[in-house]
Image (cartoon, rainbow over all chains, first blue to last red; front, side, top):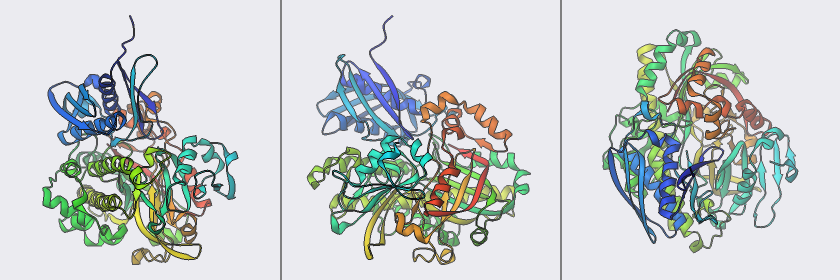
Length: 142
Length: 476
């Protein structure tokens, strides 16, 4: 069985955490980066999709758009006291619209380790690799 | 990090001469072992900071420096508006005014140990901590603005603590020139349910025993006696500060070319002090400092209620409250000339020496308490600012141990339940809603805080006064 092309990864940073999403499209890479962000807090597989939230953001280029996207997720989870476990992203030029599914934070079941304070510009990159896959990455402040 | 690139200029001080675009030298205060263990990114980030417009004297790194974003954590840099100096959101960090507050209980160790388990459980129930926790306070819009303008003074006015507390907080508990109108609606919205919450990650509330005194005269003046117990809170401006940091980081990065600023790293995003964006950031950032001071004041009130129930004789008077993620307008003498500077301290503690006019009257003879957090299994320290520190790094010292392992590496190496059980056997009760959180914050994930404070002392930044060991650690 082949490895799925869509995946998320963490990469090391001294005090914080690097998040990376990989996908066939920019939107898919952003969806995976969002899962990587959630995984800093808790295992996305433990999150039930009970609530749907619509989000949108815009930025001058794709890299700033990734930062805006991750910060929008941090904001929405913070003010709604939710954790998301699934995302669907649509990107049209410099605008992003998305749906996210999640539920209220359950400390016992989710075992949330740490809040994400925000997405930084460190190790920020959105690029198409020679393998034909998009990678969207940056360090998030924990 | 390779020591070969440095010139040793003191027992724990190393200098990199300016080259290329660097406007000033870079200076690291640490011993050879600490520098050797630092990531090479610290060198890169510190020398990048040295290229920023209007930087004065040097870009400094404290003994606990580690890889941050833009500025290293443990970075100090001062800028002169008259020389085109800048303010940087990345030079303060997302957790604006994250800081430490220590309270003197007047209790003996045995008093606390007699109720240790009940006290730990009750503190964990009372102090909102962890992801998704909310405070009992809900702020409407006018009240939020009053809190952002008034800081801990506002909190005391609302019945959280005593007026006497304000004399033991930086700036009397309220930073002037805060501009609540420059704080976005989103930032205010994030704070609506988060007043009086501890947060998560490395934030904590600890009950600590004073296990060693290094400077008995200063310890006595501070009210620190070996064998007694103190309570320390480490947290910051919560969601409001995080949102302000994120918004201005983006705005400064986008606007930098328009300000004629070349950034070697986008994360150094900054704006001229004398620009609309720079002034807006200063107003919002000061409001976030007031938010952090109010938050720690509310947590103090909650802590006192718990102690009153279990140990009615406890006092919980403030020793001091000091922030370690700040940007302050300060006056410093540089090459014999008094200059108005904007000093960034990102993961660095202000450390004022004896006689400094900004110190409250009661601390003027001794110098400022410098509160250094450790990990939940190791020590914390109280240091005191030195007269020398003013000249060395604008009156700054370290802020904690600094991580030795990334969070990812820590979770591979440690199991939260095992860490908590091991600490309990050593006499420290850990209370947290998250086993994974405990694993990420395991004592073994941090550097040796004792080596860090010793280096700070040898460098002349601050002097050790007392060592504190955790008895109870409430974590997010």
